[in-house]
Image (cartoon, rainbow, N blue to C red; front, side, top):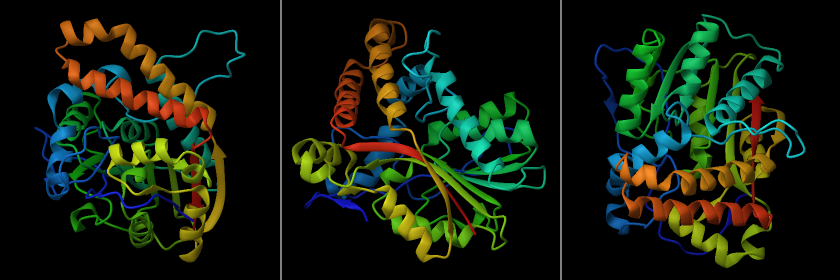
Length: 333
């Protein structure tokens, strides 16, 4: 089931990703959606346009690029706090999640080869897609909202020699455009579905686009609510939902039920909530440490950073109070 919150006005969609072809970045544009937590909600009637404006704001985009390293925008995996080694950088931890998800797929009795077709929903800067293309020679379709992120993805694909393998389309994963294609062998996503206002529709789109063969796999990471989060901390969760323009977050059981209804096999859930808290704590620390540089040398607006400080703090608080969880779910035909 989903964990619900009262009546918040939420006029937002979602984002996604897919393969690319370039010389200069060419992106197919479809109506926008969300990618990452949004702050300072705009009026309901203009939410969609202003959401895209938010993510395509140069100052906000620079914040994401500089703190995450410019390859990925998703939660990382960190060694245990008891480890004697120094903690990895945020980009290194973020890439560790890509490696973990790839390993999960390979241990689910499938292979990834040059013939494999993957759809990445909410691809961000495309780091996962480039890793998969370079490692396995497969082709990837990236569906994603932000024009600036898509342009960076396109540029990095060219620089890293994988532009023949990756196609990028701008749009929402609640209504994946026809030009993205279908009959994908694997559908992949990282920390994007939470921004959807209709996650059941997202699951239906996945069902429509995934190959009907027994080798079809869905793997995604998402930020979710614990079952009692909204009863336990209504004010905190309410504030967070207002920032995200959402009424609720999914739960692990919600996803399991929705995929089960469509005939999928549950191939397991990896619980990584301790990494969620660590990741957002690390982002807050990095922001505070580099704040002067970000404003002075990089030109990130002070207002943008202040909103991010508040948002990161809310996520950490929610994690500490046991209101949110994060992990990787895998399903098969």
